[in-house]
Length: 273
Image (tube, rainbow, N blue to C red; front, side, top):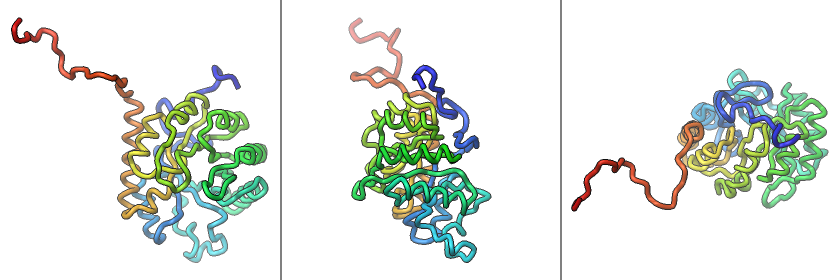
């Protein structure tokens, strides 16, 4: 698809976030791992205002559903859209199989696709990600791929038919924030599907930066679950998303090297005149 024909993502200019044909008021997506207990997770989810919750299928105890022993028993599916993910998959076959199992078990075609290429950094395998995405899109999945912050790769994922792209801000769980805002900006200018920053967010200011750049949303987990007070941090993230989005829509003033007076000086008589 030529650059001139690439449509702007629905919601990037104005209006709600649209994923898989469904509208969401919240632009914050949250995870379910690393919480001290299920009750804290539930309270944090509520404080975040999120409407989409992601679950690692390979780490969820599907057999314990209905007993209170599965985290899925602690997610209100009438309130939240479940976004299963293929975390922990290091090859195409495992990722595709995990997505298929998720669809069978949960009755959803939504999938956050992860194909990890390096165990230490948890960076994605670019070739494997593209291959798995092609297979899943062809199989009828609504694919949201976790990817490095590469504009060319994001464009290829869009061309394959992915519903959104999810470039990392920094390594998963690192809390380093957006390491390369310029790449994120280029991605926003390159693709027409929603751009959701995923991985590496540490605190509310990181979220605000992502939203001020024009990102359509942010997915995070460790920054909330690992905070000293996850519920308060979830609330902070909610406000950061909302504030950052408002700032983006309002349009910031241009940056200048030198000062510009805040008050008009026309008509002011200077000493000695």
